[in-house]
Amino acid sequence: MVNESRFKMSRERLEELKAELEYLQTVREKEVAEQIKEARSFGDLSENSEYDEAKTEQGKLYSKIAEIKALVENAEIIEASSTKDKVGHVSRVKVRDLVFDEVLEFQIVGSQEANPMLGKVSGDSPIGRALLERGLGEIVEVEAPEGQMSFEILEINN
Image (cartoon, rainbow, N blue to C red; front, top):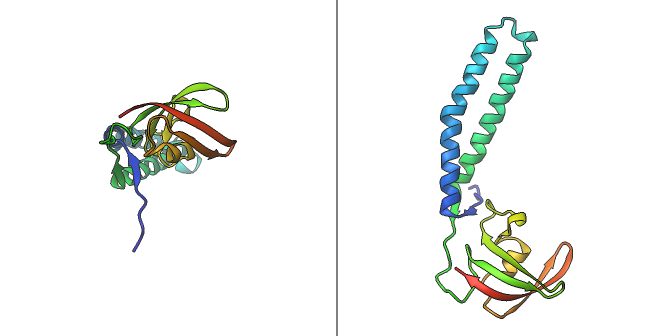
């Protein structure tokens, strides 16, 4: 038996992936098929760069479709925490970095939605794991690749 990985994501992200998959399987697949058909009309396929490019594009498209299908089929929906006093998935958390004395905001999201530049951290990341299930006012220690970090939880919005 194969142990399938589950991909944690919000319901919104799952719907985005489904919409992208639908677009790729309908509109984009027809466009690429048309490119191949047009390139075939140019004659000798052995020296037809347009045909080669279209076939390469088709391979990339099928690879992307397979990737998104795997994500959709193995999606695990994360829901907002039912307790308002603990950090959970989907929570927005305001913390004070005790080393640099600055206030930061994070949202705990699934791995498919993580974007640290936008303050979206995966619940599987060092910061996400450290914050999950912690409460207001708690000091959180995080062992991160750049070293030890310390945060005080200032605000939790679920």
